[in-house]
Amino acid sequence: MIINIASKEIKSFFVTPMGWIILALITAAFGTYYLEGVNSYFEVMSGAIRPAERVGVTIYVGQTVYGAAFFLMLFAVPLMSMRLISEERRQQTLPFLFSAPVSIVEIVLGKFFGLFAFLALMVVYIFLMLSTLNIWADIDFGYLFSNTFGLLLLVGSFAAIGIYFSSLTSQPIIAAILSFIFAFLLLGLESYFASQPNHWFHHVSLLKHFQTFSRGVISSKDIIYFLLFISTFIVLTIRRLDADRLRG
Amino acid sequence: MTTTLKALGLTRLFGPNKAVNNVSFELSKGEVLGFLGPNGAGKSTTMRMLTGNLAPTDGQVEICGINIIEEPKLAKANIGYLPEMRPLYKEFRVNEFLRIAAKLHNIPAKKINSSIDIAMEKCGLTHMSNRLIENLSNGYQQRVGIAQAIIHNPEIVILDEPTVGLDPIQIREIRKLIKEIGKEHSVILSTHILPEVEIVCDRVQIIDKGNLVFHGSIDDLKQQRRGNKLLVGFKKTPTLKKLQSLFDIVKIEKQEDLLHVIQFKNLDFDMEKFIQVCVKEKLGLFQVSPHITSLEDTFVQLTNK
Image 1 (cartoon, rainbow over the protein chains, first blue to last red):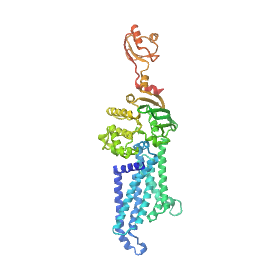
Image 2 (cartoon, rainbow over the protein chains, first blue to last red):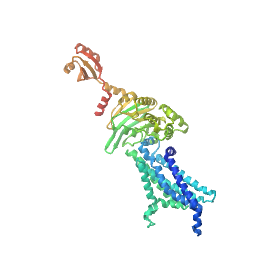
Image 3 (cartoon, rainbow over the protein chains, first blue to last red):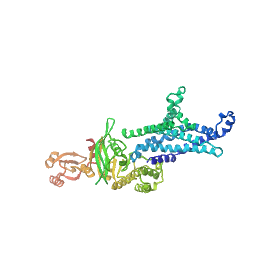
Image 4 (cartoon, each protein chain N blue to C red):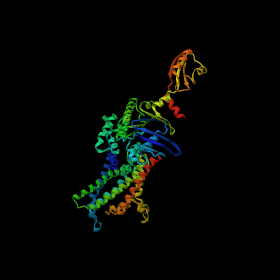
């Protein structure tokens, strides 16, 4: 059932221009960063005299691309997530789902995974693009996997924020703005207390946890953090939709 | 006849306002139930509770013997619901949308195509199958709405004001369609178009300010309308006193010209005797007919109690 709802969401992205436009923009943006990385690699590396300054091509290009990824996704995800529930509210189509033999948990999970599958497509796409380096270099796939995994968790968190704010309003654009602001604040939370490295803000900052993955480290602590983050917002969304049924 | 739907003491509060107050009724298989009421009477609220879209403050709903609050999934599988605002994903084509509806209602993969075809045929949508819902006319969109409600062949079909905003030809077609659906399924239909109820429904239920004020068959409603009144034309109008000496009359109302509405005390008054006496008394009787209160009047009477 979750799959049915997810597939409806994915179809919905592709029958409107939205899905295609976002895919095109993201592809163009990542392609540019990738090209930039490849182009400047030898130039920068030939300038690096000490061996410690030299890095492999995977890390150099990977850092350029994945460093831009969280920022680009910060814009892309709210645009994709904004319609998920708010559009259903606006068009009054929620009774269609509520009257079908599906639970609210399935509806929310279906919508989340539908969006997540679309976003995963982009993440896998970036991975494939970077893998093409392997044609002329021997690249470090472990580094790419760890980044891909981290980016998946990060866009999953953005998607969870997006679906929650989408459930709060019937105006998609307001949902997009709110989830952008919220994700933006959470992303850079630690920079507000940069002088106090042990402040608890550092532990809830999204970017802090993503950085572990971007160094090529897959740590269970960060995985749990992201999974908890995602489930929190999904539970909040379920509660919000259930309140519709209870409060009317 | 098997009971398909049972509502027991349904009550819904919105803050301090009672939108629906202790409404109970039953629905049998193959029956079309008309749900009448003025705007804001609680029709839609009741329907939302019946379909599990709104939790009742108090009371129970049983769909084919399954409690909708305890087992929502099982119960909802037996309901097809078309809300007042039709829930259509307008960016899809008709057949794509119906496929989504079919999948959501757990129709096995093998049967999906055939059930889409059947639903489209029933609703006269076959030639619109590849059109974007967005581009369809109001009437056709309504048909898509009905098609998604019947695609899984549910025991109960609940339609909230299905003919609102349609042109007379479309209204006729939709009514025909509803009658057809009513043969196999139980149908609940809300409306405030009164003649519609007489055309389509077997049973009527009138709700006002959240309370059920009338509940009975169409014949009961007609009985209520006919009642004990005659529309009589006298050339020489007799006084009330004179008439009361001749018959058991409660009241005379003067209509236009020489016409009068005479209300008898009893329901089973003797029409033949009444005419004989009138002729004997030479009152100049020139017209006698049963005085049928319009459905609107009955409705107003019932809802103003």
